[in-house]
Length: 162
Length: 184
Image (cartoon, rainbow over all chains, first blue to last red; front, side):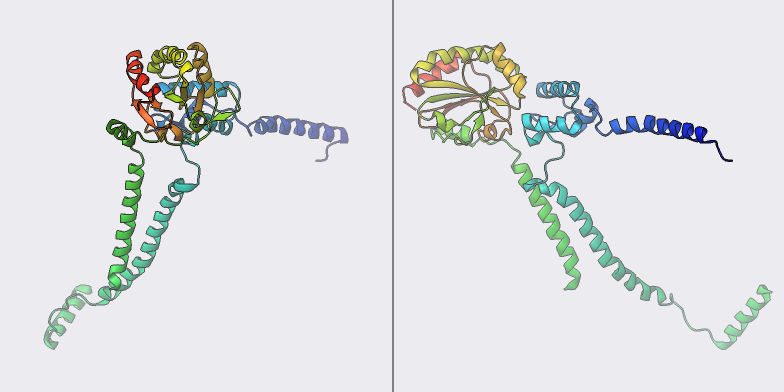
């Protein structure tokens, strides 16, 4: 079905409007406003060394109020974290900056995982190689049957096997 | 021999992890070496005396070395600390008493944001200089783990007396004269 020219223009304009309406909030979502709950989970109460979300010390209350002020100013989460570092130092971040001794936090867990995998990769094939010959060895075969017993067994099996 | 390689690696790795854990735990605890030295009368040098700290409400900074030759009553405080509010008027009064004797109270904020500290200074009518220790490294070197704490530093830059909790007028009156007179 072919649409007349004017209708096609109208449909295209409508499509543009719809796309624009969908895209506008999505573009605004690039810099979402921070929420207290979100920030609290990733920063520390610096005096009690607990996550701010669970800390109730006077310093934690002061720090939480400061975060609320920053949220009210419309700052994003990274901006709030930056402001907190300027006021309380890097210890305020739940995840420490990746340099110096702090690097162990980032390096050790994957290193331990990698070493564990390497050990498994090294030892598992050896265990399997060892277990294969053991499996191939016939289980305790017992004494060899004499020819008459063997013949009797064969007959019995034939009889019951149909 | 080869069968000992993997258990050996595991043992070394476990030992390394334990050593790392011990190192971390050892560096978490509060240092009491200053307290012990002062009790014995050894008068330790004030640590980090050359570390510049920003002056509250200013773009400039100052270090303890800049005050060498003066008796410095270094008071570590925070706006969120109630005992700090109680002792602030005592310290402010003392500032007026000792200022003429080449001595000063020096406030250092502890884990406090600057706007709260500035409000505290205004509300308590504090006129003595206040520095900000943003990282907390300066006060940690004094073994500080809480507030308020007060250290008296003599004219040679040595810690002559300290109090790990709230001070009162009586403590200042008992402690300061001998240090102002250069007797310790």
